[in-house]
Length: 173
Ligand code: FEO
Image (tube, rainbow, N blue to C red):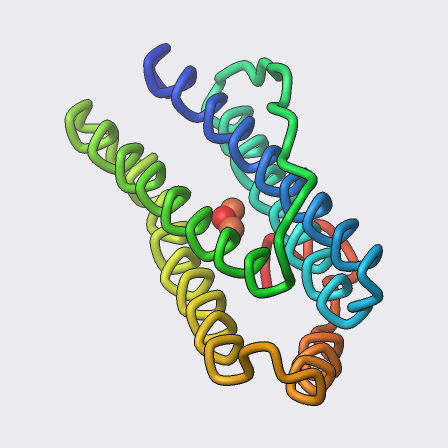
């Protein structure tokens, strides 16, 4: 069983993960509109992966006898300055998500909720990977700058990301 406080906190995290997916789809929509289809593909894969995070927490709350209550999802930003701007914001967003996961871990420890702490360990590791991926892409943008050829090469490279085939495989990748 989880406490009502933890149940509420995990429900809030479900909302944040849904927002993450929504945000990344919004970024993908912008990239599509600018004809960076490879980058858009990357962001769609990222959005789908976020849905895996949603399902993972959703299932855990239920396993622990809690009740999932969905809230309204915040409207994501839709205007971006450039593809580089998109990935810079994505990197910032992942750092924000890391802070949210860290707060959940602190709460679990405060409550002596070791099961939830163990559950959250997966997310701690996942966030290291998520941040590292975005950081690496932002660094590539910094190298490429506004060079058209470089941007097309980056678009091609990011387009090679294979989206998860199911939400479950996104969760368990
Ligand atoms: Fe669910 Fe990208 O953090």
